[in-house]
Length: 241
Image 1 (cartoon, helix red, strand yellow):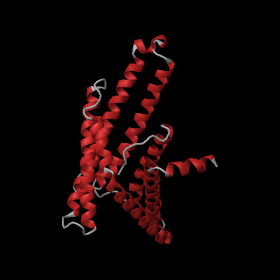
Image 2 (image 1 turned 135 degrees about the vertical axis):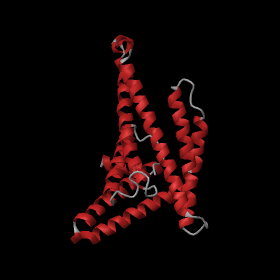
Image 3 (image 1 turned 60 degrees about the vertical axis):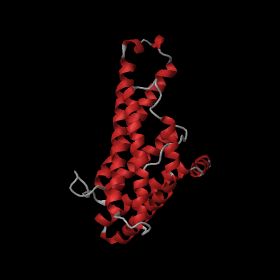
Image 4 (image 1 turned 120 degrees about the vertical axis):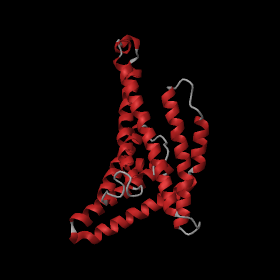
């Protein structure tokens, strides 16, 4: 009953609902792709699951039409970052915020073109939005790796190793942040692999992934995101495409 109450509470928030839709969509793509490719007798079920996955993805695209303002406020509040923060982290975070901010209007234009609202080439705008997403993921990976190296260096330094110099609670918080950043790297790597797949053919492995592999990578990324949200007590995070 407690788990059901927790789920209901999560679904009341936009981010919680988005995480569930994302996870469910990629799971459907994973199972549907496997059934279509490996089980001809159940290919009809697989096709229906792939259709459901596509509709859930479209649902998230429509909901992201309203994310621009929230992203703009976050970007404005972060600004150039707090002065006490590491300069590399600040630089990468600012660039990541810019990439995220540009991603949304590009995706909106692509969606509007597909819906025949705008008379423009949707493929070009989808490519541009995917490129901004991939750039944001790369910057996020760089940020997390830098933080992991910095925190581990501090934890292993002679001064920090001397427990009387560092409170036990702070050490545990640093270790928890290291684990969180490692999970963020794994999640972003999985998403980055899919982002490259959705770029025009000729770019690395673009267009070469079967549906089940896209679903697997997306499922891994989504589950890691859900786990991090649970660990953080359901803290809000920016929406993931």
